[in-house]
Image (tube, rainbow, N blue to C red):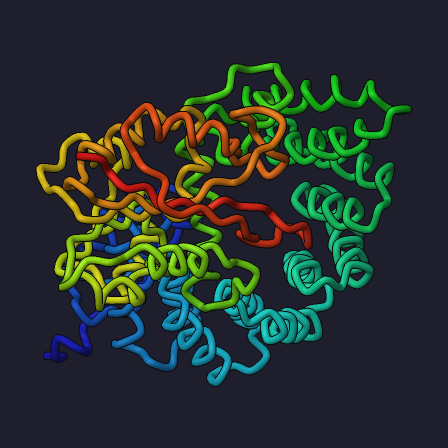
Length: 476
């Protein structure tokens, strides 16, 4: 009688399992795979299909367990290593995903798919040159690999090699003329190259191929908006509005910013704060850059640190709230001064990075105003670096901070400086506020301004963003 390790399902059972998966009946594939792994715990094929089916269903954590089991049973299975890499990548475990893809490549150096997937992971890790090399290798191995050509284009664009990026996108389109994503990406590159009419044609082609392509509508709207700044083409503004409205109609959750664009153009009321979906998508991209330390054009936290040094006079350690703590950039600086250091943020991706700093007593995924309203803790200091840029009217937040501070407690924060109006949206879709607005609000809430400094918060597309840093002290 064969041992448990030698026992396996019949070929017919494997065929049925594979048929379920390949026909898109993932729930059926899951049920059968679970049944087979219970009967035959060392059947590697069933574990592999189970992992792939669970990933398709969206149960990624469970998929990881099954995929790891498949690799454990047969460490020589290149497809199992690649599948494990895909699952790890989706879970954000990029270093582990890289290791899985590299192992698949060790076992089969001409595995083009693994080279392409490795490129995706390296790109996510900010290793753009290495990512480009991985995509290029995939293309050498499989010259008609349209997806790899497109991915190489994205990487080259991020590296500022725009003409080469354009060539890569065009090759992807030659290989797959209905590749809507490549048409959209080509439009982005052409826009950067100043070839605005060609960019318009690319975005329109992407929309024609995929009529519900919200991002392409948004990009076309942004293009029209930039063209409309030229007095001779003012009619483009109305076209931009139509595109943003269509993007919002297709994708009401709006992670791309159509709501804010329409508000900035006066075709929608200005939201009280940055829409949640847009903000989370924005910081999901930022989180990895902060974690890797590659965002070298951001100086906001240094300005906050200087304000702290200039105005912190208390002896001994104090209780500090890092409001909108993000990736925890201020954590290491604040920790030596803190008896308690708490952080609050809405972005799970940012909080994941902040947790790795191991500087905070507690971290809370919560709306900032809600946290301030519900907490029973009174702090000596509340820090808010680049937080007010997500709120239009600051009165509620300032009032809640005031209630949360101890007497003589300090509120250190930054705003993006507005000069034309008290409150408006800038071209980067952040709220800007005037100095006069902040001074009036501070006076109304019995805050004393003990520090004010103007500086450069960061550079956006080489343009400096002016910021004002304040330290307010709560009155008695």
